[in-house]
Length: 193
Image (cartoon, rainbow, N blue to C red):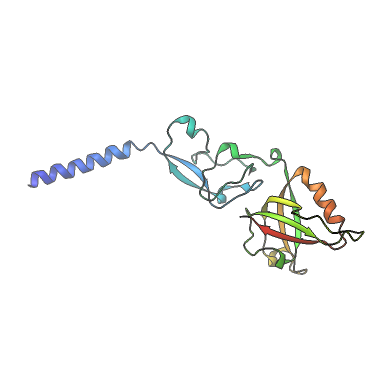
């Protein structure tokens, strides 16, 4: 009976050692929170997770955690919390085709949960210079907030809240023209994620 216990214990230890040596998982980066197109990605935005891939070709699609993240990268598509960071979803800031556009907003027109990484729609209301209404629908759709300091850190004197948005380069001029064409534009934010 003691001999049987020794054999069982030895088998368990040997099995655990063989299993541990057979662990072919690899450490790759996963995104900590939801992030949208144009969001900058740094070490604070990712966490290393161990994953087992079917083959090296599959592994090559992702950034391994053994190497530091490249400097100055942004997302070219949205990525959800906990999702692995694929190489195909990143680019350098200058290659992604977005620019950062700051908006100063009345705090009550911005959902309290909007933060860096949120994906939002921007609506502009008010009267045009000739008394015409602003267009229906969002002026900017599915844009990413890249910075969202709290009111006390934005412009405490004016009481506005600043959001910095990653906007497609081609959409910037029409958006600014829309704002400039309003006598008193009312800008509202609708949060998608």
